[in-house]
Length: 533
View 1: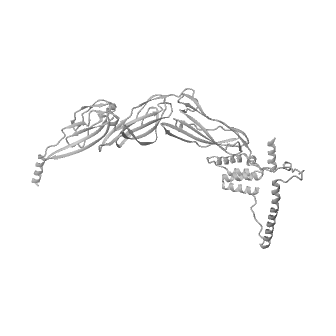
View 2 (view 1 turned 30 degrees about the vertical axis):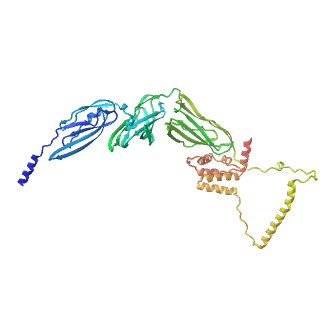
View 3 (view 1 turned 90 degrees about the vertical axis):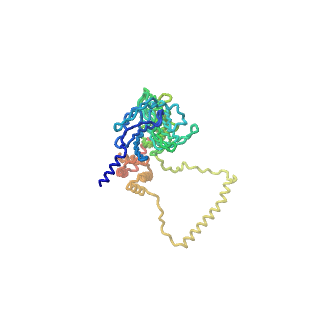
């Protein structure tokens, strides 16, 4: 046991004593390009496990990337050497001479040195691993006007990983539109992968502001090794104009605004209760969908209007944003007469001419008539009179001769049918009494109304009410005029539910009360007569 301990002690004394005695710092290239990453390497001549270089001083002049560390031990001819290495990625934004400070670990310091950073304007496009192009359309904006900021990242090598910071501007809202798009582009014979992003820029305050361009930081694969890469574009000065004086109402700055319409059911004559649909489409250039105003129609007496919910969208095309909203308005006339559906106007400001303008659709006049009634049979006085034949010796016409020849044929056909019927009655037993369906009476129509009320089916109820009114030689409009006010309101809700997408709660019990309101035919006829005078 004593001999073993003595041998271990001799072995330890024979090994050289290792300790940190030297620390060096160097860069992989000098000078370096502004805006391009380079690597600084710090080496210690011993294994260091509990300390690392302090890079806080580098933050004043450089963009400091991640730090990597490695340890290495070598034994050559019995001689042992150890080494710890740290590698840091740095980037200088501007050209100039920078002092790389001394680094200290465990009381040992490296030597400081000077790094030269040159402008990358002299580097040719062919040698660029990555670069960024930007464009703002339009270049000058009004307050709250929407502009499109297009960012294109060109990559000449494979990108391993990276991040592209979003642009920024003081007193402006900037949002990315949709997803990024990828394409291929050849510049001076070299193929690039192009990653494009579109941003919506909306300044909220007038003045001159600097639009900060996005910056790429990442790693690429070049010559089978990973290399740090960075790229940036030039910042853009944006002149934001204030809202002109004298603008009243909605502020809608745009290069072009168009308002169009389409009609459905707007015939020369429209029956009472028949809906007329007016579809309005508003399109604006360099405006967001949120900026487009709501399209509404003023109320008219005896004409109810039911605007539908607007559909809004916007997209980017040819570097400009196009916003659009579509609204449908249903007009339901309540009384016969002539009505003028109003014109609709949208004020906007033309950013090209610098003048206020109005997008407009014209008014439309319609004639509303009562519901169609049954056509009366002509009276005997209105029937065509028979004219006596004065000249019996006039020669028969071609049609008269054809009629003379046809009469015997018809007579023979009638005799044949009579003989067949007589023979059938003799040879067949008597058939039971026929039960053909009879046309609906007023009672049958009322039963259909009751069934629709019980089922609370708005379509069936409205058809049954209309059929019941016509069976009593009246109209639904005339019939409901004798109902109580609350029952008429519920019938109006029923019509609204038929002509609009909105779900409206209808009190069917009040409609039942209106149906059961006693109205004699004499009262209805008297009401119709009174309306004529």
